[in-house]
Length: 175
Image 1 (cartoon, rainbow, N blue to C red):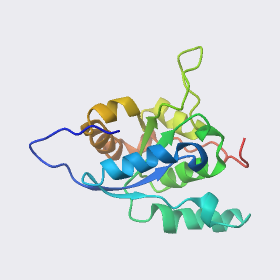
Image 2 (cartoon, rainbow, N blue to C red):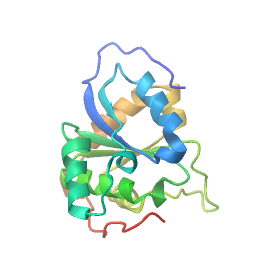
Image 3 (cartoon, one colour):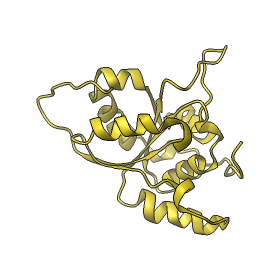
Image 4 (cartoon, helix red, strand yellow):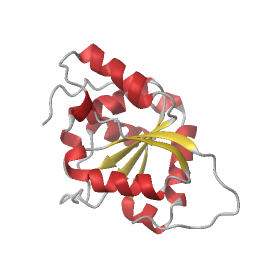
């Protein structure tokens, strides 16, 4: 699904964490993981929904920090039709921002365009796109040119930490 392009100098291979709705967008994660393995050191799939059987909020947040985000410099959020509804996606974005990691949102084809030409993204991601901290790109652009994603990761990692907006309360449940 993702196109390749040749560049004269290899970019820095970043450790990244990928947050997404596992029930609806697994194929996009799989494609990203398969096609970007030579550009990204790590595309992590530590699904909280499959691995954590706990209602203890502090425990879950510690698991996110220690097992999902540890060693990553940037979080990529694959935004599909129901991603905005998932509490763990919100919590992963929250933890990423708390750790001042770069943040990239990717509009995947399952995410419909709204009548106002906008999209329904996770609210915390939208806050940071609006503030200028997070980078927003489309799946179609990265499938046409893989450099679009690596460039977005570099822009996200270079964004001023003062632009982080993590003031929203955590999503308490799946919507």
